[in-house]
Image 1: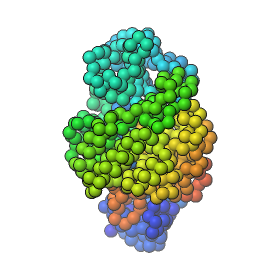
Image 2: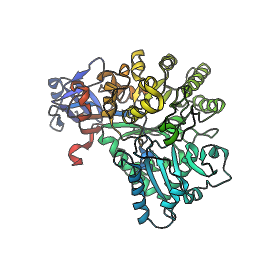
Image 3: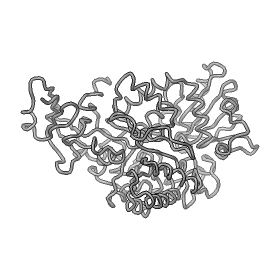
Image 4: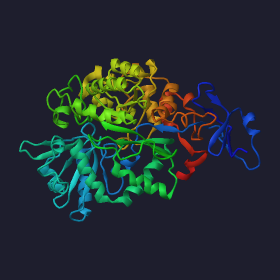
Length: 542
């Protein structure tokens, strides 16, 4: 007997042998038959649940190949102050919001604001130590930038986080000082250290509460699987706390954060179909907007880069590690059988990483793949071709260009390089199986935005950047379904509606294949299913 039958809708299977169908039968969480309405309805018995799609579209659940639901939970939610430019458009308004929070805080309470944006906040400037001290004279205060690669701390926070002196060189090199030699901006490792102090202050109960909320955000957006990519070992207990109490509403694939010359704490393959550890991820460079992405041609010297971002003249960024250190990180992962994902924003970093991949593939021809490059913002077409020949796949951060493509093109890299960012069209034409991601907590889970930018290359201002990199909707859908499943080593399990796979579905009010690309963002998620069981419904959210 089949448990459930989905019928009376458009079934988009992502299976090239049968791209569309009319109905699907599910038994014990597995897809057992896909076909016409007549073929499937005859399988039903009195106990079978009939789910009338009422003309809606049924697709395989969306897959976020580069997500951070737990990191998002740690970074957002009470007591974090949200100062993102999307709803706090000016620098003065952001500071006023922080001051209101400080006025209500107890002395000594650690205060963290998130979302300072040098590209979008009107009137933005770098906050000075004096300014931060005046805002919160009795409280540790940190203001994190929108991309989570840097923060500004006041004197109380510097002291509370143990960053006032005698620091390990790995922290010291990530502290930018003002003209008096005082710490002004904390990036990468130094920022991570301060951030983790805040997480500890907030407590485990808060993290578990917010994790549930973020898993629900993914599910409500139509995602049935997400990576937790770059998870530090001491965070694992948060997932365990949720799993002991309830089933996860989405599948999670974990990549432990690779730390130089440190043993891995996770067990390769540990977990089950809902939660499994599969890989290692590390950051080979930093952020475009912190100036720490390593590029072969310098940033433009503009008011944005020099005054607002405080970058040096002709900035080229830098890798997080020396080539020897990066080689040790990559060798450790591949030699021990882990899938490897490397954060690579700048093209210089891509060159270094591809060189090392080529060396390691020669030494370890059976490397556990597909090995990955993450974000790939400034990647060049020749690098895409080389990566594809090596069997390396790219995961592209589409919302980055939607929200910040305009300042990148106009003020950071110029029209030529600005149009070339995120070359997923080039990758598709070469036959690479790419994925698109939202990289929360930097942007919220939004598969429709990924599809919209892929097919239109339009930023939030409506400008088109790099039209030659546009792809058709069918290609774009693969990047958040079956090809994203391939990135997460789950193609056998999810990503298409095919007999023998798990019944992970998303129900949309319209088919993306029949909607003009301009209207993709108007498509609504109606329901989300895991193993054939509904975990989200639009009715539940009213």
